[in-house]
Image (cartoon, rainbow, N blue to C red; front, side, top):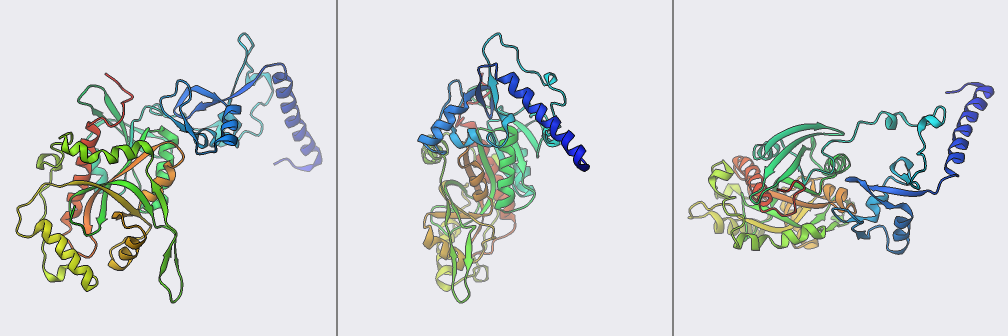
Length: 416
């Protein structure tokens, strides 16, 4: 802080001289501002071109710039650029001497310390095929055990870098990150940090979820998201029921086409072995269908019993199944039938409930980053199951995630 009018005038003089020198230097050059791609800094696009696209097409418009590896939204490319000019660089005529910081005295006057001393970009930035988010310790362990160790990378978060060799040659580079807290806020922050630090091409959240009573799947099976239903915003009015402002929505097109193709992948035996005892590494727990294991209204209990008997009563243990469906997400742990019944009236396609996908959906939406939730069913709402189902569901989700990646759903960055 500069004290006194004399000191203030001196400080202002330094700043004014700084900007005058910059202006005099750049006035001599033909300048076009360029915006580097987030995960390909050596490739850039014209800022004026992006501004034109925003005016004519809108921020959510996506396209693939020349020499880019993937599509970007206008919002993603402009994000942070307008508030921080350091994200842009200038392209000059060949043969023109570049402007160096030493051309101006005290060139870092006014530069925030956080920017001057910012941690260098990760060596893995732009090289990560899949970022994998987990929440619980057992979810994280189940994922980490299935992939080869590479390194630990410290940026905004501490990432475990893993590798997966692909059957056709090449390999995926994976970044695994555990959210310390449950809930959509922490999940959104973690996903945003990973995108900023590493620029992964695709995000997965792998772990457990509660299930809606269903004929198609049950305890231990895996649900892959077909859309995200965000129930985070709710209002509780005195004397009235809870009201919700449903958020979320459809998946990114690149994720949606993979979810839609899941049943075909199963029919064509592309996922064979994912649900074997060797892949899961845990025995399937038993199910006790005694009357005292059920809760909820009479109609709900009957529905739950009918569905569970279909899968477990008098039948030999079967391997886990994989299905697709809408995943409902909120900041509440849903174990009561009343709340779930309300949600099903609002969004009938919901098959699983958890507490993180809505946050990750918000972090990826508009950034052209695909996202899928892969959830092992550890609970059925209306049934008190054995705790061993939690561990088993962690393993089935991780086993499916590995098998899914081995089908090479996207072109790897590291090719044969």
